[in-house]
Length: 196
Image (cartoon, rainbow, N blue to C red; front, side, top):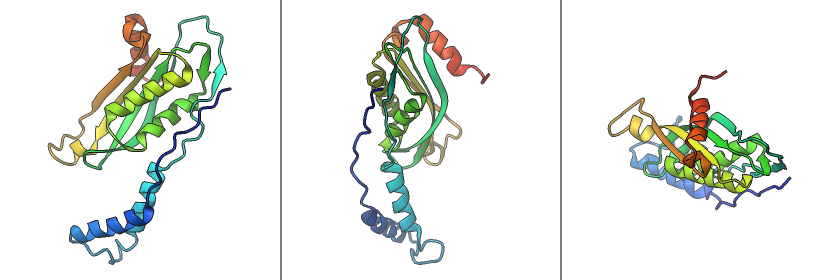
């Protein structure tokens, strides 16, 4: 087993977030001392701290793997939430992660943990997908990785064009998941097929 440590992130200044949330409520014409809002600044600060400073645990535990086939590992229907860095509104992702193991195989939970590391931030969907693919490739020791995400962005659903229930699809395919059309088709089949 080869553990890969979680990346360090700057800590959230919860006291300052609480103060700024109170200021935001005032700027919105609200009374931050009224019954429904009195504890809102503390709750908002606690949420940002929990969301941005969540410890995903060990990210890259791998196990030796004797490969004799060209099969892939696929975990799909992974849901994750992130926050759009352009509007500070949430977006929800449904993600599939596939890779062809070489000499090492990742624990399945590590695929989900890699996604959460990148989703729990101010983000763009395309960046989440790209960074997860590259980190899985490093952790698994293979370039043959595909990450496909379908996102619903509240910045499109709630504001502007109000295009609910529009979905955004993005993918990052590395190695043979991009160059081998037969492998790509097999991955796509299982990503898109109904649950067994």
